Amino acid sequence: GQQLNQSPQSMFIQEGEDVSMNCTSSSIFNTWLWYKQDPGEGPVLLIALYKAGELTSNGRLTAQFGITRKDSFLNISASIPSDVGIYFCAGRGGIQGAQKLVFGQGTRLTINP
Amino acid sequence: DSGVTQTPKHLITATGQRVTLRCSPRSGDLSVYWYQQSLDQGLQFLIQYYNGEERAKGNILERFSAQQFPDLHSELNLSSLELGDSALYFCASSAGTPGYEQYFGPGTRLTVT
Image (cartoon, rainbow over all chains, first blue to last red; front, side, top):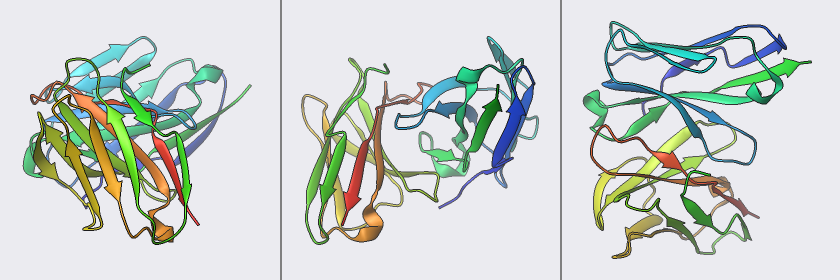
């Protein structure tokens, strides 16, 4: 099935650094979502974006819905140890159907203290 | 805690067997979604039910089936299991209308030996 191109696949950073990751698609989406998954747990919704160009923050997290509707990015500022995990982007809507989510492959974030 | 529950948490079975995974959605949510997450793959959408009826189908094998009961809980049945079916299976629920986000359960880890 269709997937999103998420990059980078993994990141190794120092505590306190800022983090940036993004997702691109060959087709448009009506909604972009960012989830975080801890080992052995289900994905947890971090941010939802509903409008092209929209910029939304959730604490130290900021995400944007690209103007073309084919991309999104997530930034984490001043990383802390609990930010470790796998971050997934997901797109919904467009030709894929109204409610089906299409997920990226994930960005694995590791933080060195 | 997302409010979505899944049982069992772990399941180990042999090839050729059949298993049933169970999901209870968040209180008030009418839609249930099933996803498969393999080691080298992202989250793959399998199937969605809304208020007891199948709403959307993804990459679900013919050996797999699902249903949603009148009390809105859902079961995913996997039969003639193969080694490649070993994966994490997640259930998510939402209010059902486009624009209402999906919240994921903790998952069931299936190991086929």
